Image (cartoon, rainbow, N blue to C red):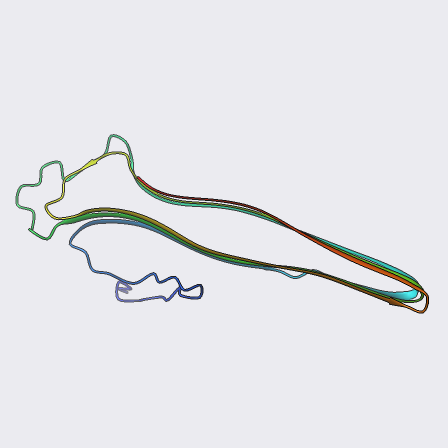
Length: 178
């Protein structure tokens, strides 16, 4: 069937991928990623040790491109007055990473949690060829990203208890329209 009238809303992160009507050429690349990690560790006993390690590596590239050597509308005779050439790339990411450790013991309890998130994202709209348009030539790139990192540890015992949590995030993002 014809799904050209179907629409999907990707506005969870206040980004709108609205449907538009264009006369001419439109090259669009769109990505939506929703990632959740939730490791939980529990230790109970006379003596208890719990360690939780969570690592998320996220690498995404969304690219709309008119390649070098490509000519769009090289001969534009007879083109409509409202002709556009639109090149757009949009990406939305929602990353939720959680690490939780709990330890309970009669004598000694230790709980430790580590969450490491490595996030690399590239969103590019690139015009490397040539194009002719009677009205507008538009190149856009947009990225909306949200990273939520929650790390926690809880330890309880009759005598000695220790808990520690560490969260590390390494973030790299490139958004380019050329």
